[in-house]
Length: 194
Image (cartoon, rainbow, N blue to C red):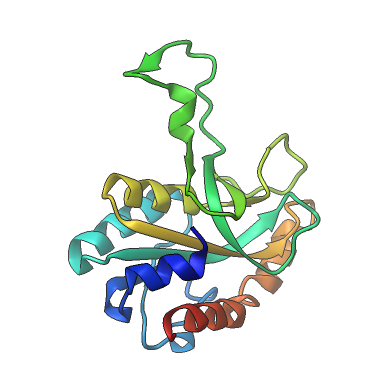
């Protein structure tokens, strides 16, 4: 389903939405003061804990993750909707057994039924050309998506490309991580003010 049609069908109010971001530098509350923004801190465990807390305390209908990401796909720049999520630092392919009916490798991926880019989430900062098969890399999206999936909540994710996940990634991320906030604000206001 097309994103705008999905949002129109669901008719979310701003009170139904929780935006989760790793760092305040990526999206200060003043950018979208009419929305509830929560900061998780960096990494999968921090993102998991904060998402569970936000769900428990605020009972949202829609969780949106926004943040910066490194691009492995060098043809991408700017803001993108992420619809496929991979846990890039958990490899269970060699275990050779199943959990129920699901191969263990399948627990490391989540796909939404929408068009978008893919993101590999891990607790390490990617700064070299690793053999990863995703468009983007970050440190929180998969964890937030997983908590939303388990809790049967609608989930959306937008990432702004801050670096190219290469030798200069650390310096570029520091310089660029806050540059996407206005693009994200415009996207959210366009989606939810109709």
